[in-house]
Length: 141
Image 1 (cartoon, one colour):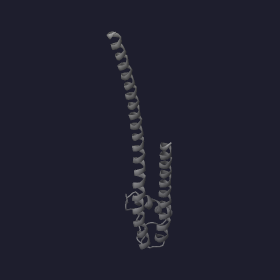
Image 2 (cartoon, helix red, strand yellow; image 1 turned 30 degrees about the vertical axis):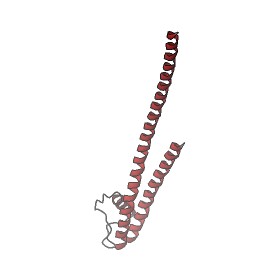
Image 3 (spheres, one colour; image 1 turned 135 degrees about the vertical axis):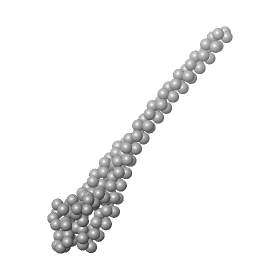
Image 4 (cartoon, one colour; image 1 turned 120 degrees about the vertical axis):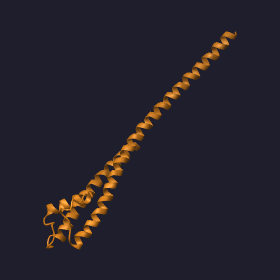
């Protein structure tokens, strides 16, 4: 039951992270376009340019073909960089945590199987000892 809760929680966190990334890209694209659209030296002129800039900025690739020149656009860039790194770190942590949970549950199943086998062997040893004691008594009589 606990594993089901953990898996469900991990899936929802992954969904929330993906939604947050999507929302962040959309909002930052809109914001940077608002500041850059009317700036005479801007190279971000439409929503397609703004989306491309957001993706390349949030992933820290930053090709340099689109970049903000206004103060507002640069401020959004800094915020997007920090938020992007934070979200991708969170997503990476979720994936690695999920992998570790699967690994730990497999190891736990193996441990339980080994414990079950040890218990079975202990029962066999006890039965054998009792049999040997009976045989010894029969031989002595």
